[in-house]
Image (cartoon, rainbow, N blue to C red; front, side, top):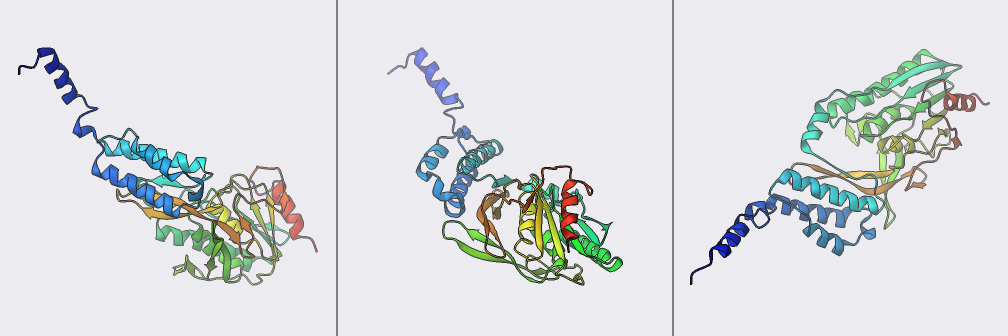
Length: 325
């Protein structure tokens, strides 16, 4: 049977149309990545119970994924991130292996600071710690401890200000390891698995970062019962909030400033098959007394001042409390 010319033209158009071309279908890498992310989120996300997984699976299979792995990957990341945000997860994120490498190789953007403010008050400023590098993490923690040591040995200290304002996060463990110089070793807080309320303690041990021995100072202050004023603000987030929580619940601690940014969930690292990472919120946090902070941290003393300087109204309020007899 002879096929009319106009049908041949239509048939050829269909065969070479990219929509129907086999080369325009998502690669095995993308298909695998989709299933991988779906499984991790369904089984590990602390917001899993708030998501309709049957609907999500159907929608993910309808995404316009192509043979371009980079474009398809980003479409998947955007899709799943949107679903998590809608469920209340404001903290989880995807990060590429390339970006991780860039951060690890870059200089640390901010360094801890310290100063003697007079009247027996020492001020320690702890910024974010974003390095993904164990050597830099150890240096960060060691810098905090040596600042504390210098202040404690060169002055007669009556009280400490730990300033965590504008600390947007990164790695909590070097922060805790540095501030360990101010407190006794032990449980500094808990990760709480929301649906079952299971608590996993975080141990804060001298000379260690996240339970591993590190090349850092082991100096401890002469008197760890002195008052500690912890400062936070609306830009204190993620690991910055964890550092705040690590000091809360102690009888000699009081917090000042504004309500924190609200990233008090703990992200766990999941390595993806394409070399990227999923930083997934699995738990929220609680302080050493077991008090939970599933949404944010509200200070004991609220002061509406975002100046973030060493002589603003937040500092003044902290100093006044530290000097009370």
